[in-house]
Image 1 (cartoon, rainbow, N blue to C red):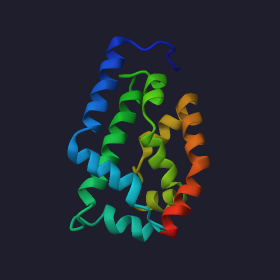
Image 2: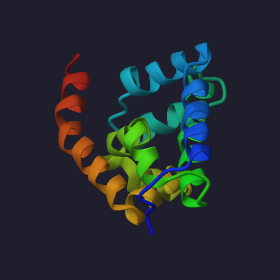
Image 3: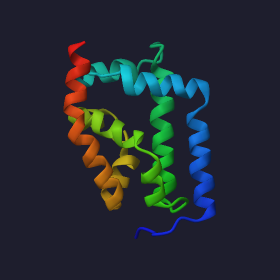
Length: 147
């Protein structure tokens, strides 16, 4: 069940999550993951995700684990779902970005973005936010692939 009012403790967690996102390496990792990494196939996805020698692999792991951790905080009741959804969209963006590949990704990595997906399935505010992002994603994907 979703809470209507967030607590001061919820606000502290949201602010801490924001602070972590502004760390310089995390900013670089997020910029790469959201702006530059647009795999067309599961093979392209795993060429980075499973390749420790790829220079972007640490960024991939950092961003993915960050958003899964943040989603887990909501799922376990540590922070208000409504407040989290109001203040964070990037995890939903990543889920939508990889949606066409998700079935193939999860065949090899069953846990990939599972917590973010569970957040969307459990909370209506998260589902609504995800749906909005998903509607824009094809245009964004096509624009990046055309470059």
